Length: 74
Image 1 (cartoon, rainbow, N blue to C red):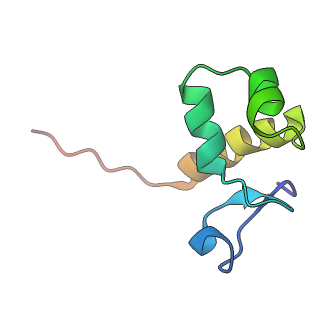
Image 2: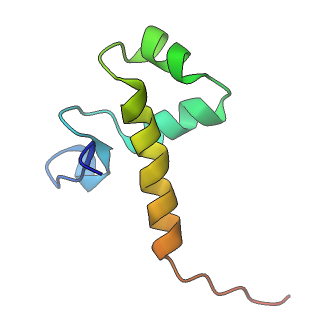
């Protein structure tokens, strides 16, 4: 997880790709929009590497895995 950093001075402490101001959320929104890793790098963030985008996904997987989810019946 050395590719993801959280700094209270950058984007109000939202997780970012280390050494950038690019938030994990921004990358996930582009992926959700159907963009490929290559398109994200080519058209939006040419300084990123595929491993940076994979790190965003790994970060969110770890975040969700650490949460306790309590489902309430309707």
